[in-house]
Image 1: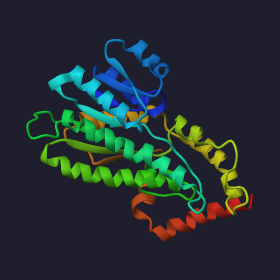
Image 2: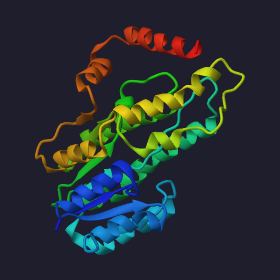
Image 3: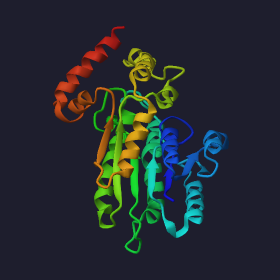
Length: 282
């Protein structure tokens, strides 16, 4: 039996990843914040799915969940950890409240790092262990290329990219691999949850820009790939004996590669500026 821990399996990408692993015969520990959010997977896979109820930012609750995992799998060890749980916040860095920025980092950066640290011994990050597990971190194309107004989310994913690059290189001494998955536009609930019911930037020069962002979210949902595109890539990375360090999952992938790694920053500035001007003048 192979064992996986997947965070944020209540919906979207996390649920698709958990379902793919379960379909392939793995035993999956899936984290949710509320017991009812795990009902679907429990009904579908009563023998192979085990819910873990905790908020990823509640470290004492995380510790209890890790103990629960250890009690069940014992010395067999963990084959893969998929850090998926996250939130998305957007707004102009000039005015975004520091508490909101801090909360973005608590969920997207500190929480996955803490859980990873706690599970690494089970994944084989000790010289005594024969286990060679994998850590798969869900990042974003926004972790390489930053759009205006997406600074809070994008910067958190930039931090994730740097931290998990370091971790991958450090864990080579144990044979434990680390892979980054970088989704672009995906049909998932994360951006719908980010929609604001009011405009916190009224009275600033970004008021009209922010007011148009919900329509941009609608466009992401329209053109986005299905969540299974991400779960398929996660499965590929898990099964590969020599996976890439990172995988981009996006429509028009070549366009994203150009923007992320090839086009000069000042050229991207001009492209984004044109878009901003259109929003300002609407």
